[in-house]
Image 1 (cartoon, rainbow, N blue to C red):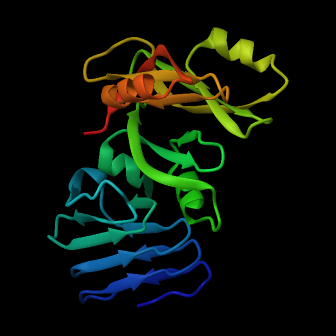
Image 2: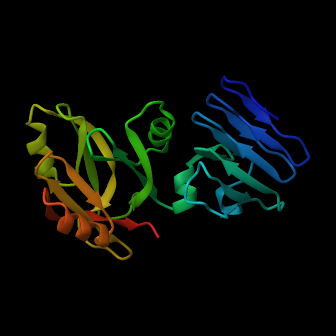
Image 3: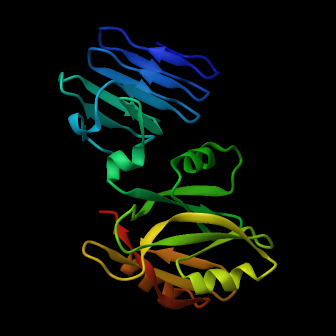
Length: 247
């Protein structure tokens, strides 16, 4: 069963179906049977009339475009590919939340500026990945952000309008200082993190590129060490904040 290049609502049968949305922002609805749902391009939804507590996520690829498998109480097995959101009894879940349990932070490398970009929005990440002739190369999920736990802090996102690069900070003092700079445009809260080490968290390291004026963030101690030692223009600034590492 295939959709059109528009926004489609596709409902499966009582057999084993292959449902593809193709282009557009589609909603795919499975039924009885072992189905494959491929949203294709766009921001796509898979609908199931079951609560979150009654489904299991297995065979995870750690990339929603490559797919993962969902099982329900009736032992139906559904493979999902290129799906950004899953509706469970009408409640909307980002695929990242189902796979990771926390907000996944997607990392892109800008081939033009040599600077990385980070986003917690699966919709923004999908749009950037599907953009034609883009300078951004997708590098995967870099780390996981906090949600609403006690002790979390907002991570603020700024756009440097002169360079097209982004800056992230969880410091309210630093946020206020950057807002006074004419070249920086405040874009809001990017995600949440911890300002202090908490059980299960890992440090996010921050480095400053003295040549470009941009910052680099990594949850990998090995990557931080390599960049610090092999790239003369990068200066290590310490731990930006604490996050959940991606295993």
